Image 1 (cartoon, rainbow, N blue to C red):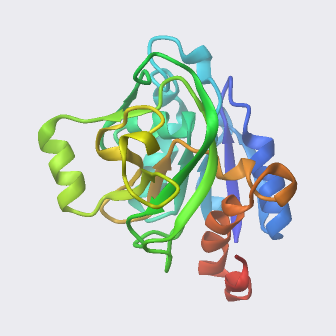
Image 2 (cartoon, rainbow, N blue to C red; image 1 turned 30 degrees about the horizontal axis):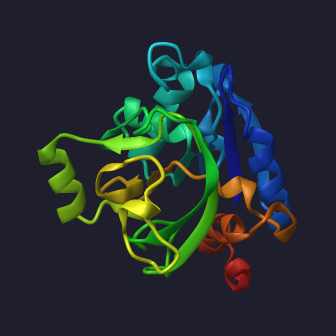
Length: 234
């Protein structure tokens, strides 16, 4: 398993992902967006940050990058791609995932820990984890996932919701929704299941010292799909 961690101008979470994959023992490389050639890799990560200063809209300029064009090609060929926070915004802007991310309800920047329920295990990042609860941190001002009614219905009906915000008891309540996302949706997948985007940061919770380790579970599920020895990670 060799993972590309894409870095755009303004990305700042790439080294956190690099550390997470180091903990897992997964080979990885931080790749500058202008030099992106994903043919050398088995999977790709689009980290968080403020690409191009989030001018216009979060991810609106980064979607024009050569790296994003390469992501489209790799996604079409089935490469596993995980996009977190600003990365989620980028892949939605690029049309790799449905919906869009807009300002949080209340117009507040939210920096907190949230709980999510795995709604689909048809991805390399959630395999075998249907119904499990994951606790991860968020840090975003534009994390409210929205879609038109037809797209929302399709996402729900076709099982494209990957993760849903819930309260500590596992119920999808308004209190468990940190940003006003429609349907408490925290993450979505594409129909093929190889592309997953979410607003929380799995790379920021890979060791108990950081406040939690559920992020290493998500990244470990990816590694386990290629290296069965890692399947015991929890």
